[in-house]
Amino acid sequence: MTARSESPGRLARFFAERQDTRLAALLFIVLLAANIWLNPARFMPHNWGSVLGLAAPLLLASLAITIPFLAGRGSIDVSVGPLLGLINVIIVKGLIMTADVTSPLVIVPAALLIGLASGVLNGFLAAILRIQPIVATLATYLIYAGLALAILPSPSGSAPAWLTALAGPWSILPIGLAALVWLFVKRLPYYDLLMATGSDDRAAFTAGVNVPGVRFAAYLLAGFFAGLAALSLTALIGSGDPNIGPGYTLIAIAAVALGGVSLAGGVGGMTAAFLGAADIFLLQSMLTAFNVSTFVLQMAYGAVLVLAVCLNSEKLKRHFKARAAPR
Image 1: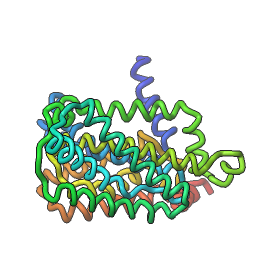
Image 2: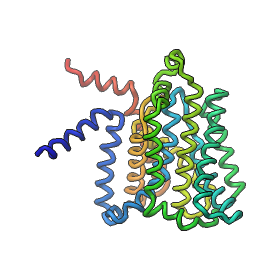
Image 3: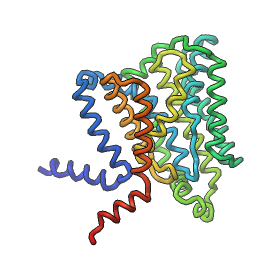
């Protein structure tokens, strides 16, 4: 009796405490039920590893997109998608095909270090030099996309067995590592500084917070999570492909907006990013079951982005609260 009463209570507390992710959580339940009904075999327990492997690149890319958003004042990293593609081709072409290196002790640190290097570059441009983040990261977007094509003009190569296993039974490893890192970050004083900067950077600066340093660190974290996403992407496609990465940028932005991450900063986190990405993945899976073309999928992503931004608009929320208030 007690256990039964506590379960609904916990669920109610979740929706009460996480108002910004309420829509994404409800949509997740609906889309998951629809997908199980349409394709029950795919979502059987023995296939959960493969399903998570399919969703992992988007989950991790969404987390990478989220961190700069939290820093506020237009902080954004649109280079995440091409960075995934660049790391993918460096791993496959540079390490595996050219240097004949297949050890995880080399490949995993290399992917993470390239991601961190990108974070240093984007953070320097956007946070230290104070170039508009959209302009700075659009520049690196174009650089990464061009470098990937220069290194590997067309899809080729193959990933080692241990890496492709990250798209199957061991897909939980990169997701779990990302979750552990984020939970560790939340225990640090930096997390409070990040959210304070995103909520009101002027007040944070007045209080003595090193605002440029906080934003620089946000881009570093974004680069780290992008490195994990690139490993999951390489595991998923099992080869090098310079063209597949850029598509993740806009889908990840749509996912974090749907998850309830405020594009103005200071609201959101890993739960919101993962919920929004899971919703996008389940929506994609459901539409694919109906043999919907990729053009319609792109339209669906755009509609989701517009809907999410509108529903998370503070002005719209105040309007609905005013309409719902007793007269």
